[in-house]
Length: 310
Image 1: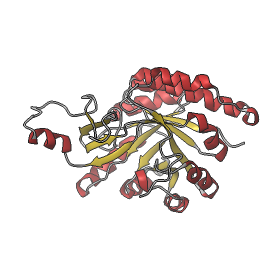
Image 2: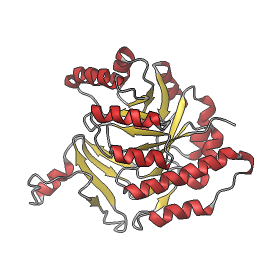
Image 3: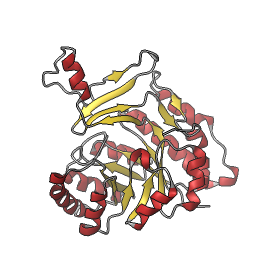
Image 4: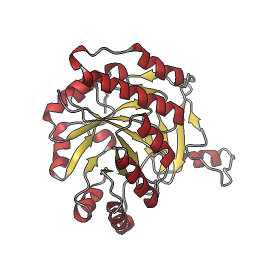
C-alpha cells in the first residue's frame, strides 16, 4: 500500500483556511491575483506568513500559486516576491511559467516546485522532463481520463496531483470580454465590479439549462464549467494507483459547501487506508454532498470517463 494522498484545497482568506484545515485538508493553496490565476481570494505576504504559521501548527502545508504568464517588466518584481515568500516558510510553489522555476531555483531552491500547465500536462514524459528541471510534482490536466491517469502513475518520476471535485476553467482570455460586451450593449459598468462576487454567467441558446459562471479580474476573463466534477465514488481507483494529491476546487462555492465536501473526501480517504482490501463506498458520503449541491449544477465525472479530443 502506498502513502495516503494529500487532500489539497484553495482558500481565499485566513478564516477559510482555518475552516478547511479543521475539516480535514492536508494542504492549502493560496496566493494573490498579481501572481496566481483563479484563486478564491488574495493573500498578502503578511497573510501568507500567518497562513504558514497556522498551517504548520496544525500539521498542514501551504502552497503559493504563481501560475500567471509573466512579462519582461514583471521579472524583477518576481525576484522580490520569491525572496519575500522564502521568509514565510511556505511548503511549495505552483508554477506554469519556466521563469518562475528558474527564479525559485536561484533564490529559494529549498522550496518545492509543482508544475501546473493547465491542459498541456498530459503525459508522463513531459512531467518527468520538468522533474529534471526541479519540479517535484505535476498537476495533471483535467482533460485526462481515468485510464490515462492511473496508467501514467508507474511511469512518473515525480508526484502527481489530480482534481477530484469542483468546477473547472473552460476558457480564459487576457482581454476584458465581459466589459467589452456590456459596453457594446450600452450597459456601462460605471466602476462596478465584474469579479467572481458579481454572480455573472453565460447561457448557450442550444443549452438554456446550463449556466457557465464568468468573471473578470486582473488576469482577464474566466469562464467556468456548468457542472462540478465529483469522482468520490471511484476515488479508490486513484488511491490504488498512487496519485499523490487530490485537489478539491473551492472557487465560487460557499464556505459551508466546501467544508462539507472536504469532510466527506477526508472520510473516504481515511476509510480506504484503514483497510484497502475491504474498502466499500458509503452512499451516505455522496448524499452529504448532494444535500448542499446547487440544484442548478450537476455532479459529473468530468473527463474521467470521456475521451478528450484536443
